[in-house]
Image (cartoon, rainbow, N blue to C red):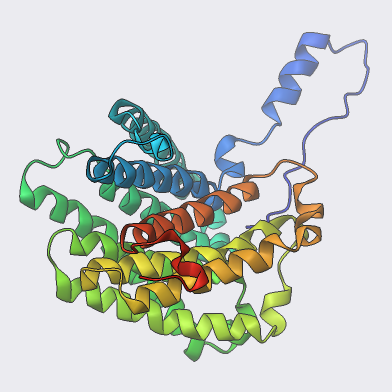
Length: 335
């Protein structure tokens, strides 16, 4: 979300009556609090780390079925490294969650401003997506009781559904919030939240619940995708430094293929269609480096928008590779 930068007290008037130490204290006091600067878009960092932890877990789980050769040596990933990555994700997510909760308490007007912003409102899904990814990638000894996973899942999915009802409802009922006016690549975060929730629900055997969330996400993904392709007024309201979020086009079909695989039980033709769509969109974006040239001149938290879409694509690629006999099948080889 783009917010006006808080004004810092950089000008110090030289006065014989004010000591340098007092001037320094005055500057520090007038600097903005971290609660003012932080917003929901920072949870993109946690989505990236949570996705990486899930990817490592998937590779570790499947490496036992692959005979050790020089070519697949990279699959022999130590489980301790995965555990440390998961712990790092947990610590960072807890820290950001505490800070953002304090922002909701002490700067609630800023949170309301995020909700009213056409980009910021989509990042309100990011904290819950982060927790759902961390839930799925959790080590097996964390949730030993079969019901504990379900309790946590419900606590996380209820806010996602509540945001769905509010945001999706505004898209076709509120005149100033029509999708054609506010659509931008970050609008796909709401869809990703449904796919991640569906993927997590199937782990508990809740097929009907997972199908419900998948249907909700797929219907709105089709609408958002078509709206963005039409390049209506809303899609042109994205600042230059936020252009990395165009990689959301890669993340959504990748996560959709994983969600459908968990529902169907296999990486069938529908999963492959979504996977190939994500590959095409990734190729289309990767072949246009000039589009992102200005957005990478200065470091920004928006750079994390490159990370988690590629992680989701890697997860889908891993699932595809595990369900295809020959790696050359992409070129029309035998299956």
